[in-house]
Length: 398
Image (cartoon, rainbow, N blue to C red; front, side, top):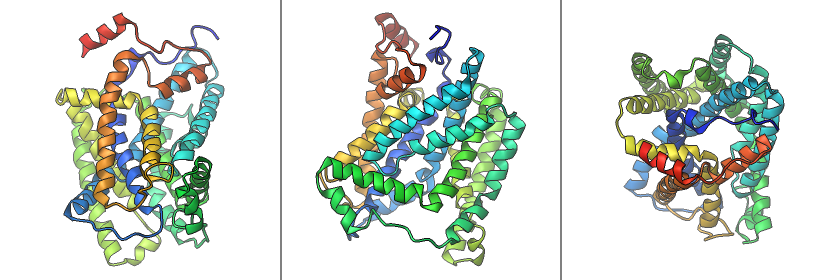
């Protein structure tokens, strides 16, 4: 391995990208922890006004907006990595394929603890994305637009296909594995649920993956035009995007919810739920970019940035902690608690991770899983702990 075959230097990281990743992780942990309500036999729990308010907050600001944002940023990171490897005269296809194989390994480990793992999807779609790594910004924009325009039609068509699915998360026989307290049983349950709930269920396997791929293409496009490094230059564009995306999110949201309430016939062939999600995600991300660009909330953003630099570690740790809190290998409280409990636990875990990430990166160059993935990808070791001079320089920079 030559010394020129190096990853992106930390000093060249784009701060807003890490900030957006850090923010997205909040929505991911909220969504994942709330999903535990649906694992288990039906249990009647009393939801108060707090639960109702938190349900509305999650529904409108976090649900699916966070994983779509993270997916977009995955596409952005893919483009940066491909450019870096290509500029060193190396084969980007071989390198990235190996990196995605390693991500599949991490996905298997994560899926053993959490049936809603998204890493396997990133690894699979990352390999597909390699087919387009030489595409121009114009081609990427066209492909992304076509996929997003067709998404409501595809989603409605897939939803109309009647198929028999094996139920895992509400099946008493399988739930015995989940609550047995045996680690192998627990891993078996999650891997089976991952397969039946995501890999073979068409709504996720087709519709969600098309949306993910469109987001990846869009992220790739943003890197092609150097978007996140031109926020000052694009301030007016950001403001237009903020208002247009808000208008779209509100308009699509009202039409979609009214149509659902009245069971409108057109929903059987045109189901625009992802239009609501994507326009809201763009609105939130644009708002964060404008806030960051204004120089406000620097302290808050510094914590988001630290959390975002350790996205992989924080994501997997969130899922392992959830296993010990909710499942049979832990407290076994499963789906017995009201909605506000899951939301609150998720926020507490996230806030703790913000502080731990900030502290960790004051002493180490990478999150532990990021370091391991990077070392295995490049097949060489990188300095893990910061030198005293690096730590002091970073403190002064802050």
